[in-house]
Length: 325
Image (cartoon, rainbow, N blue to C red; front, side, top):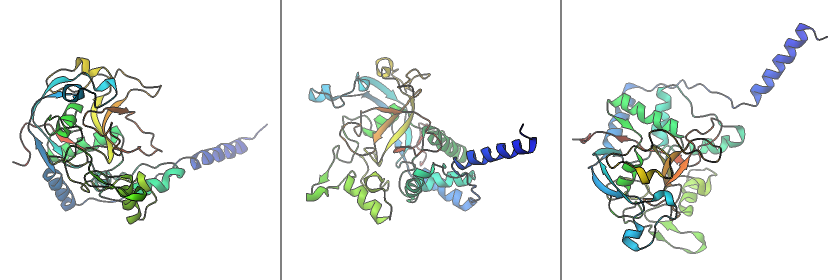
């Protein structure tokens, strides 16, 4: 019969072994000064682009303009009329620099990923000017915090707000770049250089310049390439972007005209992975999901010990008047 003391030793040993299998937790003792916070808020406001509202035809407009679809998937159809109230949108995706300040303010650390991913995760977080990799809940919390700090109605954009801005107030633009297309300089040996959108080679060069091993999986700085005609950067690539909407492949068939918010409650479950949120943009240009009309979806929660896979976001201010007037 096992004695009480021996039993306690066995239980203690098991707990220690279990703890060793978990990512180490770390405490963040950094303090954000009032001057740092004031400067941060000033920059956030300065980098807002006012998007005058109006109506547009949302969805795949390829058949109407070109006699053929832009996006091969049925969830970007039918083309339907949407009317939006004016709002302001961040010209940049949430950067590592800004997201880390948010974490420091709350004395939180970046997520503790499992050991096999730790080196990559450290490198993704080592470049302050590149987009932060965050899941939907982290993105929504960040935008809500901006609202608390500024007194402005910050949130993630709706899918309609994102597409309207990507298409420079609803114009029939296929790619949300400064020219409406991907401009690339072609060189031999796979060394194509992007003029208005990053190539695999551009991302490799940035990774090597910053002494990381991420290669083409690296992001690039948010202002590395020109903005779209509205002045908004990185809408064609450099990371998928979360929007506020739950994903429903049939939502366009029943979407309301005025300021659609997405489904009232989640309805679509994907492959046993739960309800999904809409993502827009792309991790890199591939001709479909990098377009202004392509839709994709992901689980809003990424396990704490994993890296959000090329998931980024930007915030909007839901006010019909310009913040910077």
